[in-house]
Image (cartoon, rainbow, N blue to C red):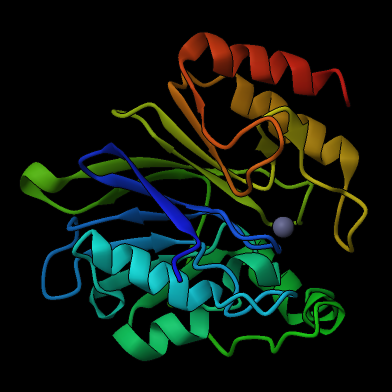
Amino acid sequence: MVYHNSIKLAECFYCYLWQGQGNNCNTILLPSILRGERPHVLIDPGHIKNELGEPCFESLTQAMEKNGFRMEEVGLLIGTHCHPDHIEAAELVVKKSAALFTLSREENEFYGTAGKMFFQMFGAEQPQVNPSFYLKEGDLFLGSGGNKVAIKVLLTPGHSPGSISLYLEDEKILVSGDVVFAGSIGRTDFPGGDLPLLRKSIDKLSQLDVEYLVPGHSTEMGSIVAGKDKVKQNFYTVKMFI
Ligand SMILES: [Zn+2]
């Protein structure tokens, strides 16, 4: 059973939108951009199984295979933040593919301290993965030749202390993790949450020129916010909550 709906926004950008009943995040795949046998970049692999027992990781694996992409071919795994519904499956991905794993230094520190509580709260095992390097604010260039992807890494704390958002400049796609959603904002009542920081982060993201806002979860208002005007309107609306 596949619970992910795959949407291709650009040659280098596939969204796997979670459609199950229980909780899980949306996953992003940047296919075929790295050199070598494991050319795919995966962002937020999500749960292995969620609170309703839905096989999230199996579903993601199958959804990717339908598009011709294998989990074994992932060379780099990025976590926007370390909540279980975003990175529980990280260890499985790394076991299957020997992919490098990365997140921000701030988030990794949180992962090793208060972040552990989340996994206990969710009844999940904390994945044993060590970052190969840290992502910090600035430019990240992946791939080479015609398959180059320019990403701006933005530190956007508030939902979690080291949350990052990823902005693909050429495609004008913003991967916002759990900072901002369609018609909503990330929770700050979890350990490590901070509303004033989230407000600043949302302000920062709202300055970008965005054609597609791709959030970490869907809401009743939708999943991907498409079109510059709609994205602007969405930032305007969510800023009223904070
Ligand atoms: Zn989260």
